[in-house]
Image (cartoon, rainbow, N blue to C red):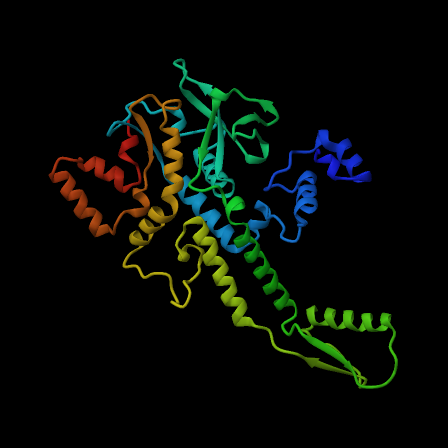
Length: 377
């Protein structure tokens, strides 16, 4: 028996008529076929737990903070073209500018964004050198990418793409929109609860009638609506009751529970992304703080090693493959500007490097001024 035989009447006819325009049923999308399968075969109706979109996720402060921190920091690190253990004498042009007409930081920012939310990012080669190696790329946002069932990019911006021009960068996880829906939903619910508490600090209010005068349903609704509007108004939440109405409160707003809930939700978001709790202005449960640092470089190193490095490695490892760079060539991010020590520590290090013949005084000046020597011609 076919699947359509399980569905009777008009529903089968409507589904058959639309089948040519509908996507196949999947367990991750909310198309009509998926709804039919889930509701008819398993008794579950999608919508009781909605699927959080990227826009929904960014409405949560901790997600937005994580996104801005991760994309901004990684994009700010220079890319360095290497040959074995030395700087490439003639770096590939895309190392400084991945896309024509767009700064490198903008492209890298959206690459990290794609990995963070969807677990991957797409680049297609737009220009090549005479030897066939890539000269420039074009970023393909997830919503402009058509991907087949095997995870291969088949169309970009509505146009077919040559598989040999596709560079897929896989992130350290499948993307929080695929792996952390429960965490995101809980965070959104807590934010909504906090907003409701702000609108109505004492949520359980009873307008108790003290007389025997009958009130119609319309009059009751108007009384409740007027009271609620007054509580949210600009008059400080002042409302009026006559001698026939007594306002009774039941319970009180759990401010501390909301504060703790928002903190816990922020910690869960940080954990899902592999970030330390302090990166999203959250504290670990019961400790009052996430960690104590002796210096800013120590905190920066933790941010890089435990939060940013998996995404940076995903980018540099893919862009170092032989279809992008010749064998023996590889790229890395230069993070020295974020992790360098205090002035006294740097000066002592420069002196040791000069005495050992590793760097000259001019090269040390360049490092101090933020010019990575690996990229110097």
